[in-house]
Image (cartoon, rainbow, N blue to C red):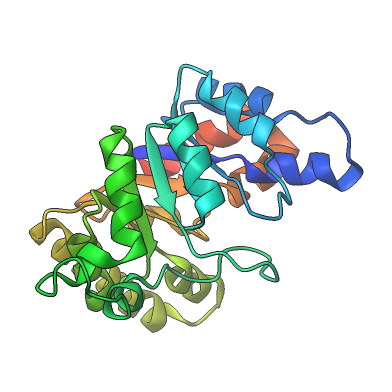
Length: 254
């Protein structure tokens, strides 16, 4: 199972003082040296952490880049110019501290105006058109969604190649002592979601809220290709350094 490391919070630390350091690109090199299989970054509309120049320099590294972004015209334009290996479309709200849930693909398709082809809901939705543009440029497209049947089916209908399952509810359950039943229930939901996605021809990644204590349960689920983890690794790196923090997460996954 691959490990993608999100380096957004290196930029968060930099932006807290509006300094030139710590540098997300230097951080990316460290996590790759520690055994990460790729780099993940989220260019938010408010530029609260990662900046446009960071993304350009990250693309120049000899490493797979998963570019997280909202479904906006500005971000689509940046992605088409940047041409990362993968784009992951995520929901985004200015007031949130971190991404609070998955993209509502189902509603976007259901609410679209079926002008192009009434027999295909997805064909006239903005989401479908963006996915088509990105795929035309040989960019893999992933949709960050909750592990729900309707969302997974909508992702397949919209033409995505990947989904990234939002593991937030599982992670929250794992933080609370005495919630083993809640953890088991969330794992069952995720396992079913992975199986449905595979049956529909989708490839599967997962992430959000995963740390050194709860990651093993997700890593044991067959069918997930990659785990994308950021905050817990950056937090651990405060004490042991980025390279070592990534090595420890690799061991936890294996």
